[in-house]
Length: 262
Image (cartoon, rainbow, N blue to C red; front, side, top):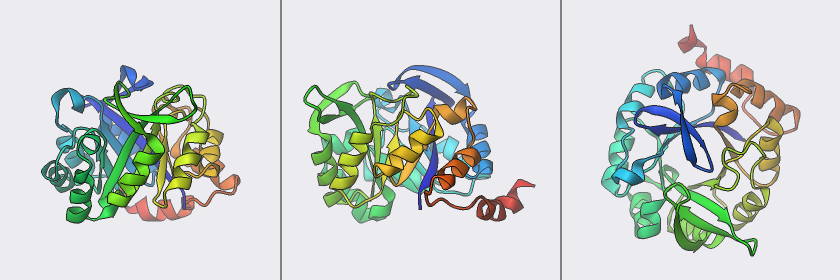
């Protein structure tokens, strides 16, 4: 079943949005947006600390603690998580999964340690991919600024062997561009590994998400299209269903959420 996942990038307690992970603009209070997307029927939420690399730590614990008071769907948190202890703190705050990028690149054994400690289902490998002149993709960190030299497909394969249970695949080239996901990237990664792949970066209209799933994605991460109210989670779900994708029925969502929304 395809999951619809609003992505909330956070800077200093503000929800922000950029283009190619740069030029960040403040949108509003992340907790209010999280609640709104939950009420619209989101399957999960994704919180990313956009400036964690500057400070070397994740600062979202308080936001997550506040969110889980009124939002009852799985939450993945990423950015600045550099150790098992960092991950434990995020999970204790109410997150269900942690996404790691820079620390995993610097010390791949961290993936093994986190999978052993929390279970593979808790460990999400976050990949920032940039297409090269030869058509391949290299992995980057620090919002697409730091070159790792790692081939994306090979890196994802290694991470999954080490225990990553899911891949958050962000195309830096496409991010914020409203021109659709990098379908070739999604196809290459999803064919290389058996774990779920979350497509992120580039959703301009609902059919972009449908195409991402057709390319192999198991979940669609969405930001711009929701934050600027160009569509809703409910509307996106309906179009996905009309195009033959297996999504949670809206009626099921209302019955699950109904008691909390009155």
